[in-house]
Image (cartoon, rainbow, N blue to C red; front, side):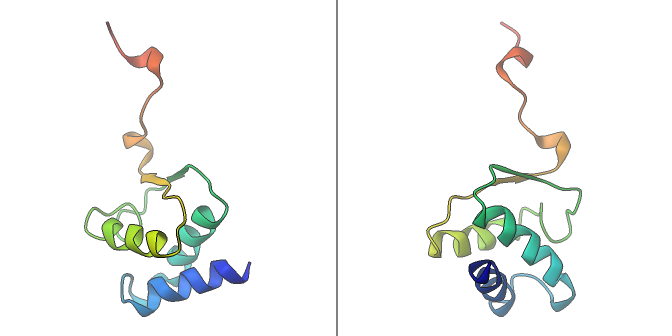
Length: 85
């Protein structure tokens, strides 16, 4: 669990998220640390944000952690049965 806190601290120390969003940074770090494939969220202010995500991905790359797909439930890719021929 210590690694999760380190990852959270790095996100916060790089100024990726504002101080009031430390819980959001912890949420991202937990998902990434545990290698969960998807993080579905309605939090478009601090998590599913196109301007913030590249910076979060950079931190995960620095730690050589696989990057989860972070999106809103509406953006979640469907399965192959949703595709029309």
